[in-house]
Length: 290
Image 1 (cartoon, rainbow, N blue to C red):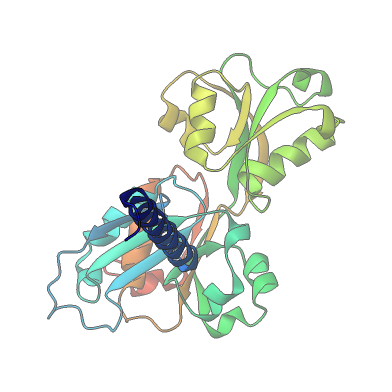
Image 2 (tube, rainbow, N blue to C red):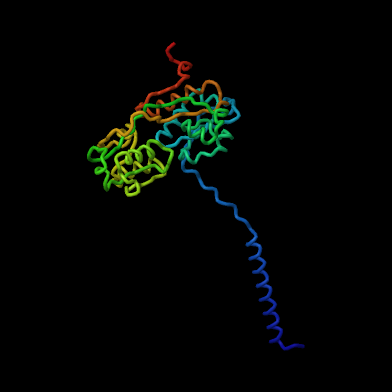
């Protein structure tokens, strides 16, 4: 019979091998697992309920989805639509999201992912040449005025004035108001844009917050900024005939919601677009002049 010490060594070695084998098996199993990618919440979305019941909403899609280019007025627009009886007859909820125009994909247009898109004709046509098969213009705000805004002295359209100024822009290369027009203004007075202090923001709220806090010297915008900021501002006209917004709606939509959409945008902007309103379907709305 082997000495007890040898038996103990054998038991110890066998146990050690078993532990190592188990560890290797567990490691191999773990290496073969594929964890699901975390689902990130979209922080550029707001939604509200219309108050309709399941029996009241007749359409196949119970959510009316809008895509805008800015968070400005977004919540007000959605809330106005949710209070509309015409919308409640067809939809349970209204969902509005906002992102730069450059992030709109052709597939989203072709799949008609949105019931309404805030864009421009040339932008949609460049993305999907046959976009008119799916969407049509509903409402346009044009002859919109854009200004340079400063918190101290009135901005001057002179090269020396912009020297050393910190300017805020929207990180949306297709935005006229917050990107293209201010850059064009700098170029027109001979400013070397590559040498200018330009700061880019992903949304208008962040842009204007930085301006309010004194982190920026100049921003561009419409007259709505004076009411929204509620602080003394100086302004100089940058452009006076800009298209502020064109709203494109799906061709396949319930009858009777166009006036509700127009009213929702009108009430939210309250004339702060300082723009001409072009709504060809206005004659169909209640209270329209004959």
